[in-house]
Length: 155
Image 1 (spheres, rainbow, N blue to C red):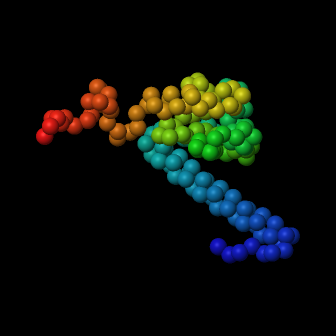
Image 2: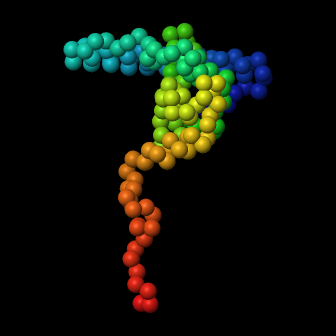
Image 3: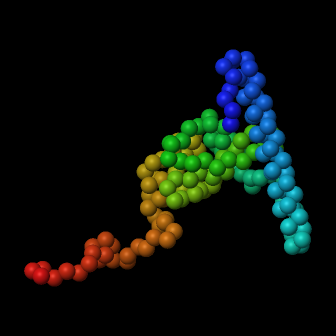
C-alpha cells in the first residue's frame, strides 16, 4: 500500500477514493455471493434468499442493534461485534462475541448480558461464559480435586 500525500486536501481526496474503491469491491463481492447462493438454493428446489440480511426484530432490539452497529453504544474491548448492512445502508450489529460465546443481540438481551439501554453486564456475561463449556474442553464430573493424579505418601 502506498503512502498518503502530506497535503491535507490531497490526503482527504485519496482517502475518499480508496474508501469508494473498497466499498465498490465489497458490493461487487456481496452481489456475486448472493447470486451464487440464490442459484444454489434454486437448484436444490428451495426458495430464494430473503431480501433482508437480518430477521425481523422487535423495535427496541432493532434500535439497540443499530446503535451498537453504528458505534453509538460502546462495548468493552473484549467484546467482538459482527455487523451487517441494512437496506438503507446503515450498519446493524447482528452478533456479539466474548470468550467462546457468540450471541445474537436479541439473545444477549434475553440472557441479561445486554440491557435494553445497551449497558454491558460483566457479571452476567461471566455467568453465561462459565455456564457454556468451551467446545473441545473436558469437564470432570467430580470437580478439580478428582483430576489430580493419585500418589502414595512416603515413596
